[in-house]
Picture 1 (cartoon, rainbow over the protein chains, first blue to last red):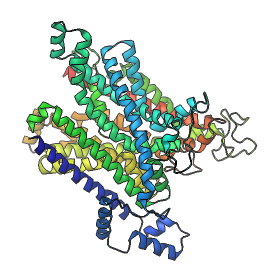
Picture 2: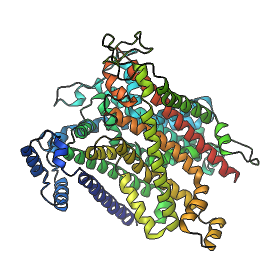
Picture 3: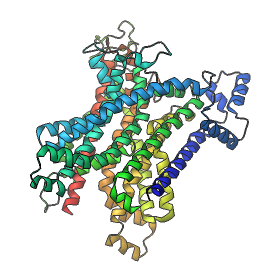
Picture 4: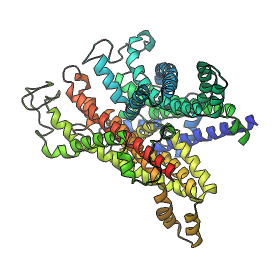
Length: 317
Length: 302
């Protein structure tokens, strides 16, 4: 039964990714009539335009280009960067790791903190500390990432204190984890963006669980309060929150873009902005596909966890 | 920048406590919004920034392009309250001139997304069947690409132009709004008044506009508030990335980008627009939150 439901989700995810690839590739068809000129600018010589046309395969029909591009994705060939002239995969391989470290650090901090604060808030429902937490998370959830990041830079790196580096400075090729102090502010920014959603969802779910019959029953039975909370209530609230956590992690894949740009962090996001600025179409396509793939895979994982843990979904299937 | 977490966010709000109100007297929506602290604070913050951004340009102290080379990157200058930027331009003048485009673009993008999303959501719920499943699958595809990445893709091929920003943000809002509109419509579609309208063969467009739309304004207003918050965030982010208005335009996101190198010697060029964007997004988000509570309290009364 499970296998069938999960199999259907798998096929659906594959179709979504295929459709995403159509959009990502189809976008290049929107390039103004003379794509090579649009990329190289008005001063480009005819030879360079011809060379770029050749390189992008613009002399072939669109469907042929799509299939050779799609085929390349499966074997890790993302095409050639028009800005650097090198293969896109080479350009991105190091940056993938840099971005992954940033996202992983943010996830490892924000998930337990968010769940802990949500539980705390729910247990003090209506009180002053709960109101303060709810207010702060509402405010943080509203603000764009770069606003939070700049506030942190102003406080910790420039105007108020000068205790942390404001930008990531390292010779190219040096792995980012060699300088952990440079990771603090970008990670903290992502944590402050992601945590509020987890807190809000955990609080709401926890309140629902605390009001439910089985918690009341446990209390009436005389089960000690800490046991009621940690053995009975929290595990039940974690299920729905797992979905929010997954969506947050998937969000990180797109959300790192602005944060990396702000801190000049040498990751995928920074590369994406550079590529957009130079209209390096192949790189933009490659990163868009990577981000969408992360998104789809994380959501698929959350769906599977949801199917496996939710008895209602199990029987409905 | 987020996807279905927005839906969860509104769910999180709805699941919170509904302020206890008298269940017998009906209060208009605006009153219920303003009865809450969030609603009041949100409205005040939003109005302050709107006055600054929309009214400010009428009383510019200095032209935004004027450069006074003798005062470069000074936190204070005889020309203006907040000094000059690294090209000697008056920071305060550029600040009050720089909010207009952000607000206009965000409102347009939100309106576009709301119109598209409401139509798609109501149609899929009302028509149902194959049409519904196909359109909702297409929604999933758009949702799989984060909004900012989608916008960057569009800007790469079409260039950093105003209409591109507005269209791409509006279009990527639409599937998220459509989900909300669809589930709200499904909630009212079996009501007697819909069946009655069907019985005397009301045309479909009339049914959507006259019968369905007025009955899902509650959830749609919450969506509008949330989407406006995210539109402001997205468009400000894009212009901060240098992909919105181009220099020498005066624009908050662009100002932050241009002046952040000088944050330690001339903080105002960054802090003024950052504070304005923060106040505006917090204001609209508080309003959206109070809309959600006001809508939830109607359903309690009903």
